[in-house]
Length: 413
Image (cartoon, rainbow, N blue to C red; front, side):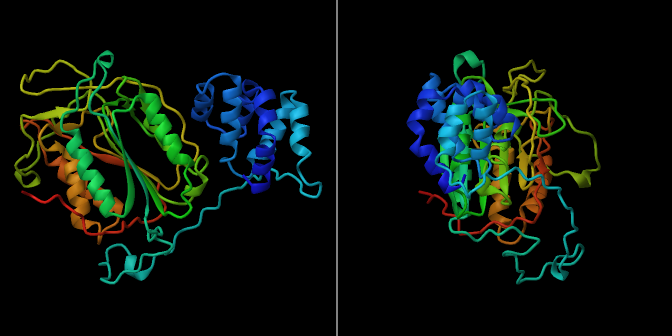
């Protein structure tokens, strides 16, 4: 929102809080793309009418240049003309309100520079900063990284403790600090608290940063959808769809991250099904590293193997993804299947992801490294029987190279 419009709202905050009827505004602000359904739900849960009005005005200030004219239009549409006129009294007469602009996307092929042509080796002194093929990733620090680590779940959720997840959390916190991110770790959050943390992250000013990372370590759920599948559980048993998680940071809802990569790592089950794989030649496999201490991040279900401890998560509905560009979601497992976690060493996915980042972040782009993770995890077996296949939904437009700084490992005593 333009500074002059923010000042108008601030000067009239008392009148808006006193007289505004937020419930009449929600549909209009949603249909005009100013608010998302999650934002409206958050406003509704903020308290009485005055509290909702206060939160609505506060959120409007973060919603871009079209938020103020949309507010005026919604006030007129809902019969709150006096408030609209009050706000317009503070608007200079020679400053017309901006009108929505409908932009038709233009698709142009990306040029391929000689040193990045497929099938040719990459030059040792590659140039990646600010190129059309690579995201700018030289801000200091690079950006924010939010890690949500749910380990202990409330009894009513009927979800078991995720033993070993703290190991995953410590590895990833250390790793992304070494990649020059500002890392914030939140533990054992309920569904509402997860949404609050994501909302707070989306409202930060990311204009000085180049990237944003969100890592979810929790129980997961299977969701049937043709876009981002799955959801993660809060410790109260309620879940947040992955698509909602990504929506907080997309180009419409977080303006200061427009055109910048938003990366999501989901260590959770995609469902309750177990994959026994298929037979291949001996050259395709190696000895498994999975052991009898492996658990899944899925809901309790019956098993023919008493040596395997299982946990599971329940299905939930999905939302839509209006603006998916510059988003990558990396899943620890294929939709519908369990994700394995060793109680002593942490999850297969995080352990291998951490190793790959340590060994290759200085030379390889993220998508290439995730391919390495897929391969390494696919070689593991739980009790020599069950398999796991990670994967990702990639909407990045360029290559992403992390800043590779020396990782400070804990000193062994």
